[in-house]
Length: 165
Length: 102
Image 1 (tube, chains in turn brown, cyan):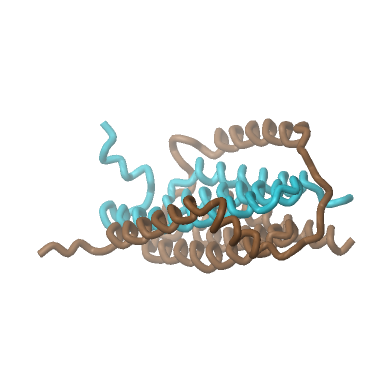
Image 2 (cartoon, chains in turn blue, red):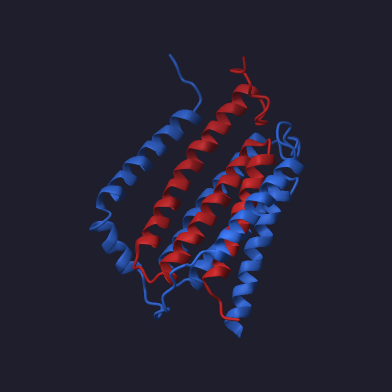
């Protein structure tokens, strides 16, 4: 039962860190908790036999997005000054809404007759994913590179200092 | 108890709810972006769980790679906008940026 224990440990890490992101009052602690969630989700991908996506998750999220977020927090140097609570939506109404949505989705989740097939052995997925990208999903794949280029140029234009002569 | 599809769906549900709560209650623009990341991650957990337990090839994993790619683009643009707001307003409190309010 090492498998189940490991799953519960990783799922617990994911869920507790997500709660930390939601409830921490310090934005730096939130970012650190977000790292726990991202690493935990990557571990869940390993349990689901998605090795390629697990590595991509670690590289892009933990190595890229999280570092970018921490940079933005440090550059705006307002670590604990911004009030956490929102005036238009307070914590209690938000909590009530989340609980209602959660109950509805939980009931749907357990009642729906999901189509589950018996699990095969975990095989390496990189070949299959690459094959899908270059055959079935070629157009979205190329569009994705255009989107990334646009985002790159847009981020540079938005964040540089104005240099008008 | 066997680890089944429902275990992963429940984890995805809890992460999604945490993300929604974060987006609703934060006034810090970077905090809101972190909530969006949580929501995207929960969607990815569902994609890959259904891809594994539905026996359906690589489609779910390909979609999750696209979602990760869009999340990276969103984070880059979003944080650049946040830095621009900070230069303009000297704060990243989303309630202070109400120039367009009538």
